[in-house]
Image 1: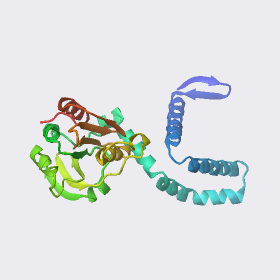
Image 2: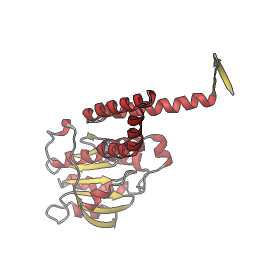
Image 3: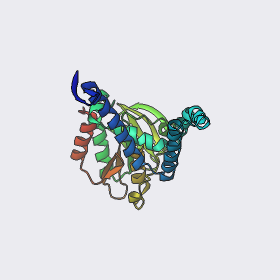
Image 4: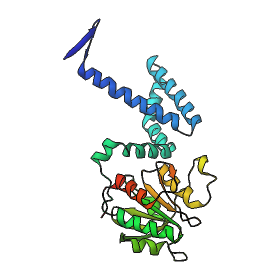
Length: 255
């Protein structure tokens, strides 16, 4: 079905949809490149693609042959070089409301036990670091700790973070209604705004959310203050009631 015609070019509904999809794709790519940390690599890639385009346009046969044969290797190299940025981009995609509607996070019916545990740990000034996994799996982080594969309960979480117990130092990873591992090591935040934070828990809590779509709960050992991190941002001093609302928003109703 032709909508309108410009000279000998006819434009249909399919053409408009096609152009919109391609435009959005390039828009997202430009945003990704703008946010990427390695600007020198981006400049090199720009030069490489410019040379490649010129080779095909002006029919430089030897240069074109080289580019045709190294294209796949180049894509793999880019994926390796931009691995942190790609993880962050996929995590943000997972936070899109439409994607979240299609792929629901696995955690269900656990928010009540988690909030009770965090509240009691806060009252006792026991430091805690709890990572709630969503769509981006945390396999390497889970492997850094001690496997538990235990059903969630507030008593177990309180026991884990009791000072001087074997598993209290590090993070707990939760997937759905299971505690997968404890005493896990998290990456520290790369954001300079958080470099002066007191204590490693907050920097580690923010760090894991920079490369994944997880939600991290943090209890300060010094102040008992409850904080949570998501999407690379730290939100400090929240009440148990506020925390329950936040967890319900991300994971649904608790028991």
